[in-house]
Length: 379
Ligand SMILES: [Mg+2]
Image 1: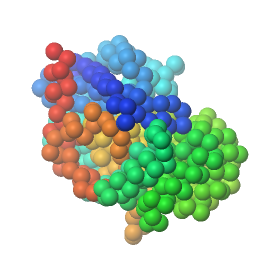
Image 2 (image 1 turned 90 degrees about the vertical axis):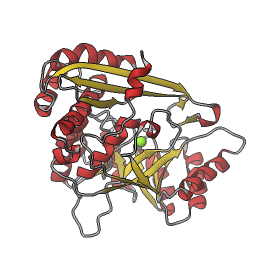
Image 3 (image 1 turned 30 degrees about the vertical axis):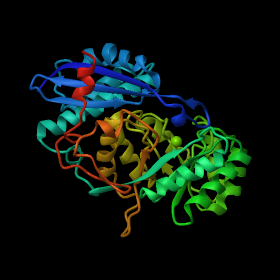
Image 4 (image 1 turned 135 degrees about the vertical axis):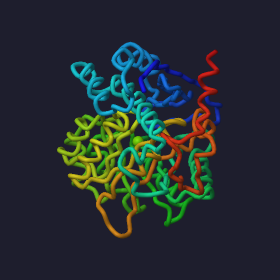
């Protein structure tokens, strides 16, 4: 089986006014998705997805930098192809666009590898630790309106009604407002729902410590990205000073980048994103590091249809960290904001009940992705 062609499909949709929101760094008014299609001489097709932040730059990288390396190669040689692509960009592309683009390629190669073997990706990766993947809902951002706290409480209650037992709240809007948001959401959801807080890099270490100490009484499962990702000393200071576990790593790249986070003792919970950090191949190397250092891994998930399927396969193969009789992780982040390129593109093999997704038995990432429609749209 040889790679015959690689195509990139870019999608964008404006969000209706009531579905627009802000996180600590920006407003979100559009939804974008970048899918990568790898065609082979056997007729088998593999699908991948890249985090869409860089738009056409991702497409150019795939088409002009990686495509010439991959044409004519056997897609099942995932380790070798990843290393060849990485070596091509090593000098100027160890992080950023180059790795995001490589993530899409690598996910598509693993999809092909599974389809060629008629096995799910999780079996190709060495077998699954679990048949069902628990998720938590992300969606409590800042929504404009006459009473933002009431909107927040209403949305939080709806998520609980739909069966979510864990919810993440966007913070990083200033200490006073954050404390008000945490109190409002905890009031709305009660004591039994797990509540995570995401500061989206908005604070200094001192501010993050102040925030954590003020909200610890609300039983916070973790505080995510308290400081900018370059501030490893800040991460360490926050982690040493507060009673809440610290999470981070969603914008870190490859096992090399995650190695540095681990070496800095920066986080309790690693959150690499498979559509950013380098796909399955980089992730399996990351998991070896995490296991060796006994650091928990809960994948970041700001993805569309293919990225979600990849995340489910990934969560199936993350080893228990640490192993114990009553396991409680990993928990997958599920985007509960409006995304026209998300679950609506998935076929019957995507099965979710309440907040739990069933790991598919079908080959590759799971058959039934209605992305043939995505490709056909382009005419
Ligand atoms: Mg986050």
